[in-house]
View 1: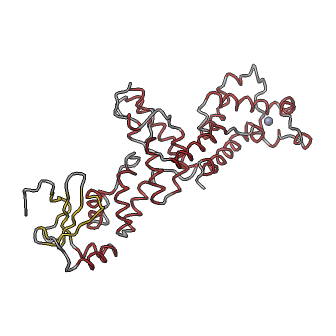
View 2: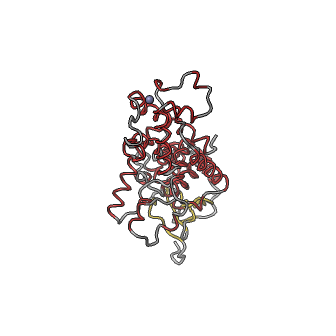
Length: 351
Ligand SMILES: [Zn+2]
């Protein structure tokens, strides 16, 4: 063994003294050598089986007494993770990442590519699932996760030491991952979350010194968004900005217009005749005027808190909403929110 070559590293993991082949792959620094067992690799992967079949008897290089196989294009760090799976398929410890780790999608991309290349489907599925599980695919899941993130945000604000972005999933990396590795079901939530992040808050600036209160403001990897995704994002952003619930459909059936009304285009005319309609128009105006317009899922929820707005005081609306409309409003709001959620793929041009 030549110890004068500093660029060569004997990789600590895995390197089995009784291994019958050495895999050589370039690392970020130098070259890593993995001494492993051919039969095990062949057992897990048809691709390895074919590779060793071809290579048998034609090895040009040896290391530590066994043939060396070059792994061109494979990053040693990724290969190490893949091999750890091959040796311990039931212990995915090294390949299990922290829930909500914002770097996860970037960290596993390389290994997933290798799992694809060497046809290790269980490993690939496990890793894709690791990313997908951080993203909701239904409105119910979105609400639970959003409540968790908002609570985390409050805690971060109070602590002043942790940065929120470091402990919640980052949407741009997830979007790129989902598109490359085929888990499009997470795209609507990832794009929606991205639309909630201010453009001025870039991932690259996270290490900069900022006043503690800014730690609770999320950032995104904006610079990784290439043209097609940027267009999708802008289209969705604008659609969310433009969304308003139709006050008409927030009314209870009891206060719905008669047939005679239905033909009327002049909402002023309706407003004069329906106190509930006038109230709901004011409610939407106030909520959309005060809140973050690109978050209609949240704004719709805030409509349920109508009692808190001074613009809707008893002085201005002595009768408030009628009993029927008060009762049906939560159902109508839930329906509107469901419709917004269903429209996200259209907003972000995902279909
Ligand atoms: Zn009513």
